[in-house]
Length: 143
Length: 169
View 1 (cartoon, rainbow over the protein chains, first blue to last red):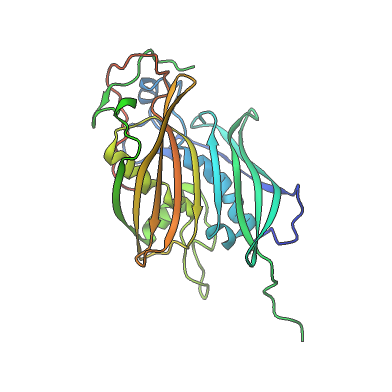
View 2 (tube, rainbow over the protein chains, first blue to last red):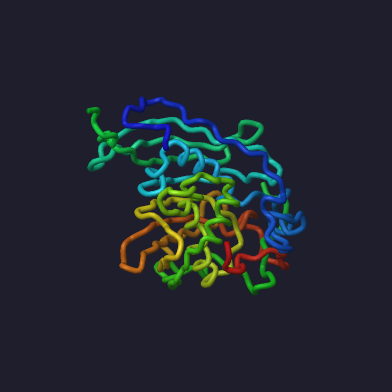
């Protein structure tokens, strides 16, 4: 089931998806990494442990899956730039807006501008994502 | 601005790759990646996404993996060739086919670019995954900055983390 259909309007705001991260979200066994250990992060010049980028980007992926369902699983595209580090206890929220639609065979590709903001509303990830929705209604005609 | 005065020279897995070591056009090799239910479970846990598409209920269609699952295998290929810790700065990706449990995907990759910007060194690599019939499943292009510390800082000392990690999700 998906939220967005072929009738979506440009400017439609995708539902926000957010998470308050914890350092435990990034632990893998007892490894000391820049994601879990202050000294390991400091050695790399980082002021504190940083979140794993794909786990922050996952807020956008959840948003796209929620909006497009199977049209995100197959046909999903994204181009994301990680603009600044997310620290491991940051709050992050993914936001997005529909910017364009275009026909792609029997489907409609819906393009979105997406971003992730931290608790200070600073943009930590920005980019574009798109997915497809069917153009032809799949419900059987009424008898 | 970074806080350290030097870029890490080496870590427990050996010397860090220098910008000069990165060869544009170099193959990153290939790997056979087996998709299991356990891997899908783990990826969904990392993503905190537990949609029924990934956990089908009784009578539903077959299970699929989240597209984000394609992140790690190309990174493993990159790490097999170069010890780069760094930070992930750009991720382009497209998924062409479902990724289902109990299938194998052949992943290949290569270095496509490297450049210097804002006093930091960047490397770009691409990868693709194909199913056992040769069909394209996903295509990806990633950019990593070699160090958070500016390139004018000398390389010295040992890091605790490494770009080379156990190949597991």
